[in-house]
Amino acid sequence: MSKEGTNRCAAIIACVLLVLVACRGGEKQPEGDQAERVRIGLVLSVGGLGDKSFNDSAYEGLTRAAEELGIDPLYGQPEQMAEDEKYLRQYAEEGLDLVIGVGFLMKDALEQVAGEFPDTRFAIIDAQVDEPNVASLIFREHEGSFLVGAIAGLVTSTGKVGFIGGMDIPLIHKFEVGYAEGVKHVRPDVEVLVAYAGSGPQAFHDPVKGKSLALSQFDRGADIIFQAAGSAGNGVIDAALERGLFAIGVDANQNYMAPGHVLTSMLKRVDISVFEIVNDVVEGRFKGGEHIYGLEIDGVGYALDEYNESLIPPEVIEQVSVIKQEIVSGKIQVTDYTATH
Image (cartoon, rainbow, N blue to C red):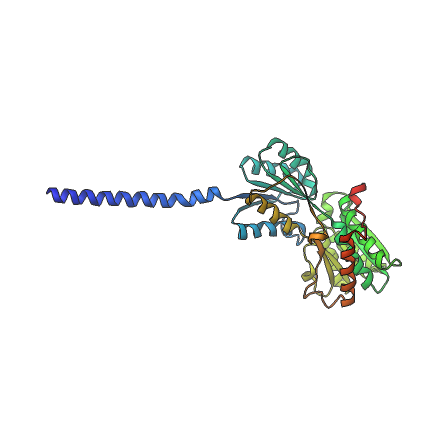
């Protein structure tokens, strides 16, 4: 081969090598981007997705963070409480940027794992864990419950309303007491019937029991029942539909589940709390300690939409708006059951 041909061949080989190197670099680049993305692990409460309430709301916050913030979302669904620690520990060992436990039932497990992994950031919903690497996302459910109680008191035509809780514990009594105070604030003569689905975690996952309790309260004269019972509350909504009466949803907006028979829903913006704590990690401003969600920042409230706007008279909406401002200003003091029990 001539010298000129040899040089030409060498030049071609050099070009090919450069292309190959460039291609390999192009293949590796997405891996580097992937490694830099924030990874978030969400451990759902027992019962998992599909409760149309608490878990679904938390998951909605995670998916929103994935869409808007570009994080890598992971989620686990323990089948029983004994598995909570396993999921939390697995995510911590994998070096995730934030591990979120959904629900107060996860407190002991998260406290244990957070203490073992002090360099990992954690968050827990509905419980306070006193570790510097844990953000405790706490809601003033009693304030939102007071508002839906006021609505029930103003709308009831029988002078009797009901409350059905899931697990008989202080956190759910927080809903009950706030609701009853709201009812009595606008109608002291209205009777509030109260029942609980059970004393263990399964009480949140028994829609048959929820429906049975609701039918009993309807038989006793209640025409509106507020449920704070997880998926057991879906049975309360079924009972309201069957009897042509009203249920009040909880946590997520459940108005759509039985249009015309869900008077409103007490909103507990778990989705917002999850999104915001993830955003804090993304922005580098994560802080442990309490993060409080009350009426003043619309962390709780009630739902008004196309499914129920015809059910609540405008004058009731106006009166409840005034009540909301009086709670925010401190003029109305709503009892926080968990503060004294």
